[in-house]
Length: 436
Ligand code: GLU
Ligand code: MG
Image 1 (cartoon, rainbow, N blue to C red):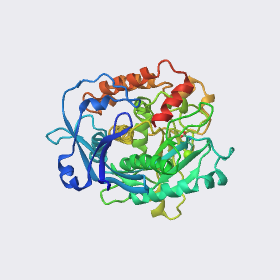
Image 2 (cartoon, rainbow, N blue to C red):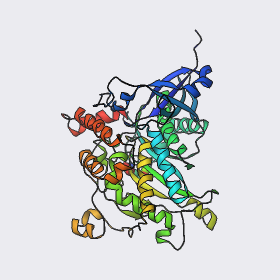
Image 3 (tube, rainbow, N blue to C red):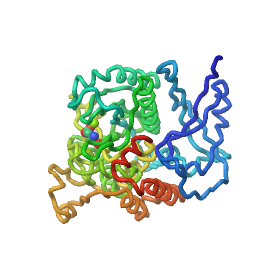
């Protein structure tokens, strides 16, 4: 029997899961206008499929409108053809729904533009692991470790290119069966779309080759985590880079400086959105090259916010390549929500004229709380509960989002925490690696 080609209309929701509905491909024209029906309470489906307290109950109707600019149509193998289109959730009148993650990011990007006259350019760097035990041990950054999965790496990079991403590099990371994949930067919401597409295509490429990929924040507390590092720069209306200034601190322009200062000030309050799982806080501990403090680092891989090195030599290329990297994120977070939180924090820093602190150059875990405090540095929340408390405690931060968001988000995360209540850390890691 011939099959009917279907397109899956999808969103990456509060749980960081990609959900939606499929429709016949030849109905696309109609679906681009009418979308597919969606249910408000779906926002409270956790990453473990439990349903948190919902203000909507069984009531209400929404639309999920696919955006043809955010599509992936990739055939990995005969049984692994992907065709999906990310989109926005709207009311039946076509207004953005308050709890639509993609619309929240668009609002944050608009705020940045209104406040500073710049557009955000960003790139997500992802780490993932294959679930099966590695065929060879001791392959940190190894050539052999790479060769063992060369076919997967080449399949994935080809799939990313077919979907319109700009594959940059892929490598065997430090951890067992851990790989890192990097794509080139793009402007606006498209970058978060690409992060969602990359995660989905990575899982599909692995599946087409009989492997299973996980982006879970950490699989084994004794090992390293899977980070999501978000590289950011700014361009003006004419598309000219405005991130760098040779005379600025660490080479940062005034906008970059104030944006960074905002991110660092609000980091303890936004981390519940960028590292939103229970085990995210196992990853965010010192000496894992993740982020344990709200510090700025100059080329330092233990900094929450890092001023990255540039390899270009001529001034125009340096200006374009210069970027800052947010390292306290992971793939339990929807890229839309994580980036929205970071952009709002940065925009707040610009609006308040904040100045970034001096970069740290030492092991902060050796300093006492008073010394850290005197330099404006704090240990980031050490549990998801503490991170959620810090989020809810900041009226500034909750005020960046639509009215009901903070309450809905807390209820959602409380249900996720409740699901894990009787599990030890190994069981929690196993639960997360099965869902991300
Ligand atoms: N695996 C580290 C993390 O959890 C990052 C290692 C690196 O690429 O610097 O963020
Ligand atoms: Mg890495």
